Image (cartoon, rainbow, N blue to C red):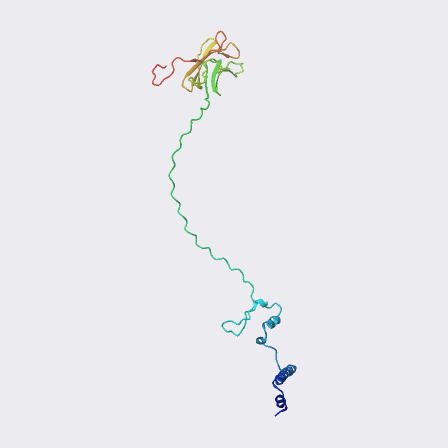
Length: 253
């Protein structure tokens, strides 16, 4: 029996366990001192050891998975997460849905009622006559008023028109049953005397014909119109005797 066995045999069980632990520690110290034990393998490192041993720029602890794969692969954990790849190109547009058909045109609504007739616009008109070489006559209707004009044609005269407003003459048709003047006409008679009679006529909106008589004087320079009677009062308009009626034959009313 060697001395170690004898020593273990002489000691009790607690003493023998302490003796064995002391021998193991001494043996490990002797081996490490002699350099027999090599560096630890990855399998011998704990998770904290691997994290501490990771070089700069390595995986962060949360990037590692210490759990062994279910398939039993001998390598524990996943590799480092790689950089995000570029965004893929957009896919082609889907086909356009069918266009809805246009509905039929609805029926035309009923025609609206005709609006009221607007007021009648003002009538205008003009007429002319020249029955002698020494003067000429005009009759103009404008702005609801009737004007008689004369222009001297003799040599040396100014040959400008001189106008007389016949609207203010008595009985001028000014509405109602008579209507309003809507067109005009001139009747001048060529006589060899110096007094020339001229008749001015208007037809109204109700179809009536009214007349005023004047005299052209050529004894004055230039020639003038005189539409007054011998007493100097303005001659009145008169409704001509017999008015035109439908189907008349050398007649009238």
